[in-house]
Image 1 (cartoon, rainbow, N blue to C red):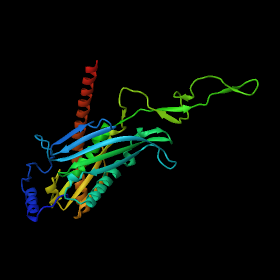
Image 2: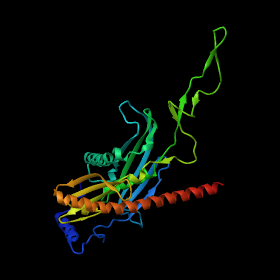
Image 3: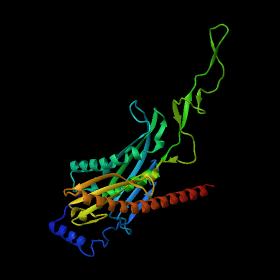
Image 4: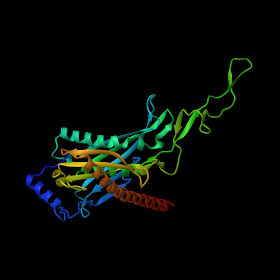
Length: 334
C-alpha cells in the first residue's frame, strides 16, 4: 500500500525515468542502490535489546528518511499444559500518527495490523525459534516481546522493519538462570512422640544437582546475559518494486506510488551460503506469471545475500563499538 498519492503526470515522469537507458532516479541512485543506512544498537538501556535504524536520513541535519526504533523485552510466563516450553515470540508494530499525517485513525490501525502480521508470522516461525528461551522445562519460559515504532516513513518500510527487528534481536541478551529445588527437611520423632526435631538446619532450597526444579533464580553475573541462540539466522527482506519490464530496490514514497505492484521476499540464513525463503508476499494489483515469479525470487536471493553480508558486518561493528565504550567506562572507574 502506497502511503502517498501522486498525479498521473508525476507517475508517468517517474516511470519514464526508471525505464530510460541509463535509468534516472530523483536522487541519482541506480536501480539497485540503497540509500544510506544508519544503525545504532543498545540505545534503550532498560530493554533486553534495542536498535534504532534509519534509511535515507540527511547526514547534515538528521532529517528525512525512514526511521524505526525497535526494542526487545523478556518476561517470564508459565507454560500451559498444551503449550510449548521453548518460549514464545510476539511482535508488534506501532506507527506514529506524525509518520502518516494523511491517514485516518482507522486507516492507521489497518496499516499497523498489516505490518504486525507480516513481521510476526515470519519471525515467530518454529524454524527461527531460539533454543535458550526455556527456563524450566514444562513450567517456565521467556516471552520475547519485540516492539517496533515507525516514527517516519520515506519509503521501503518492509525492508526497514526487518532490518530493525534483526538488529534488536541480534542485540538481545537473555538473563542467565539457575534452577531451584525445594527439599523438605528431614525430621526425627522425640522419645515422647510429642515433638518433631529437625535433623539439620540447612536451607530447604537446593541449587546444586537439581533433579526436579520448582523455581529459578537469577545469579549475579558481570554481564547482561547470553545472546539469543542462532541470532545469525534472523531474516532479511528485499522488496522488488515492479515497473513493466524492470524492478528496482529501496523505493521512495513517490516511487512506490508509481508502482502497480511490489514483491516482498524474506530470506533466513542457517549459514551465510545457504539462504532459505522464509516468507513471500505480493503487494499491489498486478499479477505475475509463474516464470516471472521464479526469476524474481532468484534475483531477490542475490540481493538478500549482499544485504545479509553488509548488514551483518554493520552489526558486528556496532558490537565492537559498544564493547569499546564499555571498556572505557570500566577503565575510568578503576
